[in-house]
Length: 168
Image 1 (cartoon, one colour):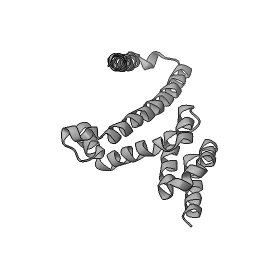
Image 2: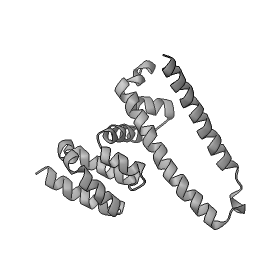
Image 3: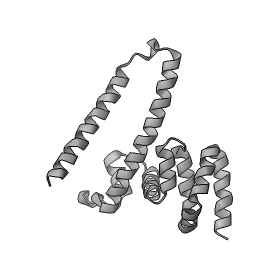
Image 4: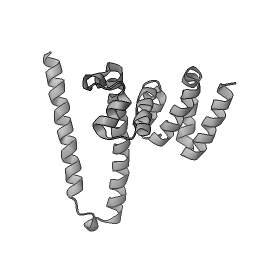
């Protein structure tokens, strides 16, 4: 129990630090910053946002698995997202679907974590996975390699070709 309290406290502290960092960024006068700094900051922020989104989805998968949404009388995680966070139904369902898929896509998850693949590409891969999760598990490393090399549009074509071949 003591570990749980310490972990909970640490998590709260980390969230507080995260909020403080965002507030510091928001307080900067961008007009005074040089172009290179704006571009560098944007790049770092983009990567951080993707990593935060993956972490948010990881926690959402736990909320779904533990059925925490039932405490508030909701029948699904998507319903809880719609009510608690004013998320559109389609967006809520997509978040839950992606959260669950990421748990079953270790190569894709690692590729997002190392910055080699964008979340947009992971969404394409998750859609491909829907066609045949078992076949996807076998093909995932090759599809992630394709995601590392291709634009999202080209990856969508690769995934479509793979999906057509997988369901035959």
